Image (cartoon, rainbow, N blue to C red; front, side, top):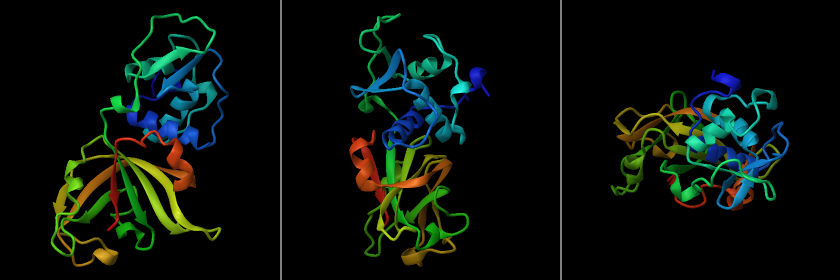
Length: 241
């Protein structure tokens, strides 16, 4: 654990996932910032809240206000600046340092992907479950190279998981379910998942292992989160066939 109780390992994709959480109203214990904001795409966010939410995606633990120290040279600000994000004074407050590079979503070099799946076949079953890996046949039933995008995935890229399901309250819709990070590049495997669903008998399969899966306690409707998603531009779609 790093000094000030902020963990090491927070990366740009964790910050972007935290911004989505913040925009969606995911619960946290932070008040609004008093002097400085994180600025991305002309929008302002409280830096401590964003790092607190980002830690959940990085290490699985949501930070609390007591984990932070204050001030211009705080570790929270250092992490964001080292990742290329801009910390700016609130309007009317004089800056203590020169203007910094203004990072936008387009500046993030890490690719992000969307998986849209269903829980009907348990995502493949034990060892192939949601948040554990991405998998798909190397060819569709007509023999076409439909899923070539799987070969583009790289270690460290982010994955937003959306699930189409009939939810406990009775609604049938697609919801933002969780976030993970790609742990390894694609492998071609002949092994079939225990519960392959409609993809049974279609070996070989592409498989990409994941890590740091973070599930939302209350999945959010795709319709509700689309307008406020930081990945709304330049995000690649991996959908179930």
